[in-house]
Length: 465
Image (cartoon, rainbow, N blue to C red):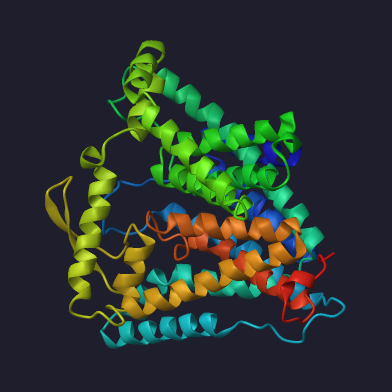
């Protein structure tokens, strides 16, 4: 924690003196060197380098659709690439094997089918006249996904090392959330009377995506143990991560976090239909009886900042620009799918859609929905093969958890659920700032599966040590 806080505080101070790039390079070199010496540590060093990069290199984004990607994305992606490359090189220099491990990775036909479709649409995009540079940029998220699947398997962390890495990642995110909250609360309190209704000052940070994920995982893990297992320190971690996710202003992150918590709760009581019914009934009753107007009035009376936050999350869909833009994009995707329903328009394609906020037609290569991304770039074939691939991963992690009751499989399952819940809101599997980690998760899942004894019934498999 102290190491992370030191890096983050130095990065915050360096930005004030225009020295952010120096701190960025120092953190990148330090993380890469450590990952090279001990590749397993790279699992959490990825987040140290990524968080320092986000804090040191600010995002100058105008919000215009169809333009070039912000330059900060290059630096942020470079931090992931450098540490990942160091991990890969370190694993090649010091290869590891476990006793009883299968000789080759078993990918399965759902993975191979999805990979085949990706290669097909890349070739189709090139035939359509899209340049190699455009294809590489638009397919960077997929490249990161497949490369980090290989890396997650190649590094070969044991279940114990994975558990330690996840704890370290949570520590990194808690430290980042603490610094982020101090900055955001200070700025918003200073501008509380100058902010427009329904909005508040917030930074665009991809790290907050992971804050929401680990907040859901911490609570989900407590459900499968006992809520009493959450000590005050755990509650503090959950509170900081959840507060950072809420202050991100991203309804997508908050919705995915809540949905992941709900699904983990349902899985926890899957053998007890009555408990599930009571749980869902309690949630429905709580939502219907919640006094939103009273909350808004009380928030307005107590603090303009709380009013802005409440307005941000309680806005109706017909008044939500983000919802209207996503709906308009999906309508344009469906219209384009009618002409090329099987494999879509290929990697490198762009989309012409009507922006209800500016009341103008705009062209963009980015679709603010994972489902829309699949339909536009890969068509129905890509969507179906990806869903088969995803369902096989969810089933595999769930069966491993039920058969071993090892906590690592529960965490892997929770991460996959969070990424899946985010798909209607954004391309979580296909954007390089987020796809790198789910790639590692999938690679680690394949690795853990190769360490389990071959058996037709997983119910008798002992826990992996």
